[in-house]
Length: 396
Image (tube, rainbow, N blue to C red; front, side, top):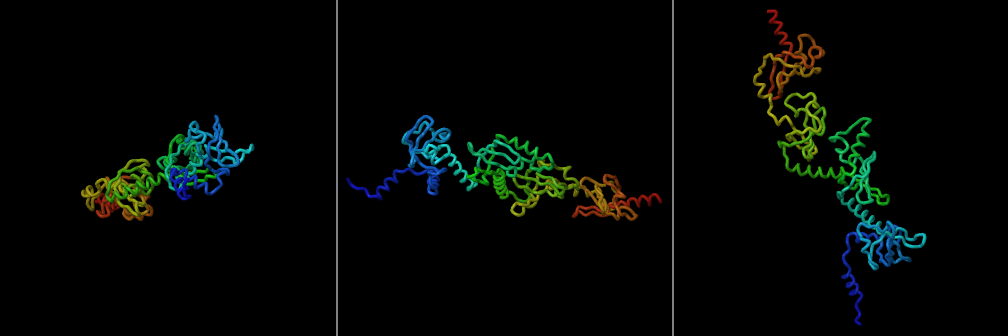
């Protein structure tokens, strides 16, 4: 009989071996790092006996391994199709039980595969589906796979799930309100990323906010490439402040400053807008790569000041309503969108220390126009000169 060289024999054997699956490759790598016949190891064995509810597997140890009970459960392998002589991957539960046998598991082999997949997903930043199964005061517990659960802290949920319209809440009842909103998530499927993973402690911390942030960032980058100053966008009010409102337009959040809300003077932003209102805005400025965006609402309508101011001239005496009183005078509205200032020195012929002693908000007054500045959209008004004229008329 012709002899076959060792090299050729190895080559022939290698050619007959099918390519390993990614899971098998991971298992082979893990086998290099520890003894597979220790508890927690994964080893390939040959089925040497099969009975109802029992498999006996030869894994090359001092004794055969036994798989029975719940350790036979498998979502991947059909137990009915396993035959004597088949090779299968098994998990070592106990290297030696009380009766001296090797206790093995099919079920835990799959669990190890799941953890290997989770470690890979964590490294790659993959997005996973998680179903909410429990709720507690700190967040929600989700099931990633059957028997494998992770935790999403409240801080890692989308804020819109916790706070209505994204607004933070304050007060003693906030905990119960949050708990009610979390309870509504039971059974819901959430897109998440793994932010912490400890296999030894079976600890998985998940984040929905990471997925939302990445999605919003991608959408923001895409939109930033398309929009330019002067564009008109549809948006939603996300916050109301004393200095203006914040508006989100397809992921681009910017500020409509108080001065850009209306051509008219705005003293109370809350009377004009509420969180959740739909608005249309014009893009004024985009700074710092989209981190600072300025919008305007008033520039979407014609400026009424320019058309209405034409009917007024310096020296005219007109009727108006005091809009506000400040330490240096009083603001008076004489027409829609047209306001002027009565300086403290023009309130009375006498010395005025506090303008509120002379006029009050909501009071109707007659004033004289002293100057008109079209560039600054400003009127200078006088109250004392109207009173002075009336006094002169009376004396005459």
